[in-house]
Image (cartoon, rainbow, N blue to C red):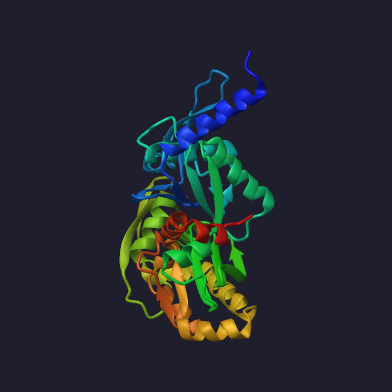
Length: 356
């Protein structure tokens, strides 16, 4: 009968072999979307952080039916036996098992559905994450098949992805507006000097549009419709050109389908509260910034990243409110995952910026 040491050596050997045949991954595990970067290949997928599960009724619990785009297409359209779930809420794991299933799907997809894989994984997390939430992220990734797990704060990854020199003794300010959170941070010498994080992002904007349409038109619209309205006619600025689009939903009084024409002025009015919260967070972070770093920010400006920063004229509003230069990264949507990927390619930098 083999000894415990022999079994342990066998596991280590298997782990080593699996590691040799695995591609290291960087994953931006976002509330709205999950992006996966493979070392040596670049960005390989960007899919909604949605999982559809079905209860087989055999006592074994839920079975994963679809992940990503296929699952998002089911949001608001599922029969009673199927549920479309967002396992990440406000930037952190809300459903441990579903997140593990989602991570396993993305790991296997990166390796062409291969089963014998043990990659090193870098996962981006919000700066407001607690030690309990950090452990949950690590355990989910390890259970899904990771060999090693590094956590890196999203603003740090975003700064690297936007091309900023995070190791220099100069201040860089990053505003990362994601689906569930907005993270504002001042970075210097490979560390975050000061940061603030609020649970306001693209999802809160969609929610604000849903509530506005319900209040003004007595009509209920779904999450996907609200997101489409935001992307098509949404704006943050009073002086923006007025545009109109048809919005379809259900009349709350008559209970039948209904169409209304919504203008960009109305959507701007709906978005006042979340935009004010983001501007206020930027102000509060600037107030806590050491004077030497504040002087650097006057010269270098504020870098905008994240899908939520693509809201039309948001940079104009921030420029008016802060009187500082506002820059937007070349690809705000993928800046975080590309930064994590760059750290993955540079192990000394990764160890420098990763969380304990």
